Each structure stands twice: as C-alpha cells, then as structure tokens.
Image (cartoon, rainbow, N blue to C red; front, top):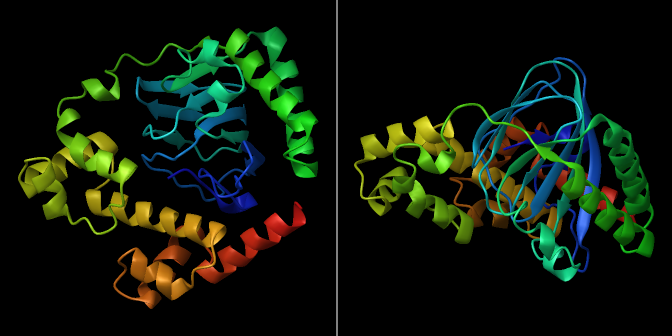
Length: 292
C-alpha cells in the first residue's frame, strides 16, 4: 500500500473524523528516502496532486506514465498502485468521503470520476490548481469544517474536473481485461466488503474455484505480489486504521486481525511503518489534538 510515513500521512482515511468531508496533506520525499507501495484499495475517494514525480500509475484502466504536476483520481474500493523511482518526489493527497459528489451538487462529474483517471492540466491552469491546493491545506489545518474549507474543496474539484485532460495510458489492457482477473473477483470482493483477515490461501483459492498453486500464480501475476504478502499488508493497514480511530489495546487489535501473537504483530507493524503500534497511535493522537 502507498506508504508515506515520512510525514505521518498514509494512503488511507486515518483522519477523516465523523462529520468531516475530507482531509488533505502534503507529502515529500528526498532522493533515496524509503518508500513502499502495493496494489490496494481504500474506503474513500482519493486525489493525488503531484508536484515532482517519476513513475507509473497502475489502475483499473491499465498503466500510465506520471509526470510533474499530474493529477490522479481513484474512487473508493478500486485497486490501484504507484511505482515510483528513487528521485525526490512530492504531492498533495486529498481524500473525500464517498458520498461527497452527490451531497455537494457535483453529480455532473460522476462519469469522469466513476473509475480511476489520470489527468494532466493545460499549462495555464497548473498554477491556479496548486494555489487552490495550498489554500485548502491551510484552511484544513485551521478548521476542516469552515465555510472557507468546504468552498475551496468544491472549487478545487470543479477546477480539476473542468480542465483536467485524461492522459493516454500505455498500450496494455485495463486490469479487468487481464486474463484471469475475473476469477479472482470473489476473494477481492471479500477484501472490499468484509473482513478477510482470517482467509488462508487455500480458502481464498477455493472461493475462486481454483487450485492453490494456480490461484497463487494468478494472484501474483495480476497484483504483483503474493497473496500472503497482500494479506499481511492488508492486516497491517487495517491495524493502523484501528489504532488511529479507536481506543482498542494493541493486544485486542492483534487478536482481532488474527496475528499469531502480539509480539509478532508489533514486529511486523514496525517493519512496515518504522514505528511500533503504540508509537504510531501516539503520533496520530498528537496530530489530531494539535489540529483541534
């Protein structure tokens, strides 16, 4: 999953509090800073407004080459991935609740934002969109619920929708056209709609009516990592959500996510996020309290 712990920000809805419509952060990496990513989905709509970037966007429509100042939108529950170089990179990450468009009179843009889309702005609109993003971030940090914040959010999305031009993807098939993609749908729907933290590879293969060996090869071919790796990262990011949004103990979260032991959970969490679960929880709580 798209990890940006350098600024305590993740490609997940960790800070969209109840009653809030969105969150926005700015993220930056120096050259050769650690970065990891894998095919994933999240429960909110997401815009990434790149400043400096060198890499590729993998999404429902295939793969496309990223360039400085590009914008990508990924709707809730759609699998996607970013593969980027070791060069310095930065972007704004903006996440909004799934019902935002209907609730704010943006139904006319539903077709554009129905699936993942990679957009590029005409040169004359780049500075305006970046300025709107800066203003929105400043307003969000002051008061996410203010009229200024909600107005800037809507204006930014309208500006992107009106002026963003779809980038031609590489000549490869959209993900749903890849041979075998449909066969994995049952297990991916379970990840999206229900908890899959207890799912073994044998059970996942049976859900898809495949042998374990065929399922394993097919899963890695499509999602570019093994099922066991996907499941572990899914569990770790679910743990991070639980740590940031509730008051469950580390042991309870470890048990709920079917880790073999609390010590194993802590070790795996630290390996993925570079901090222990408790350190992560304290960082998130401190950030939330500073923003109030």
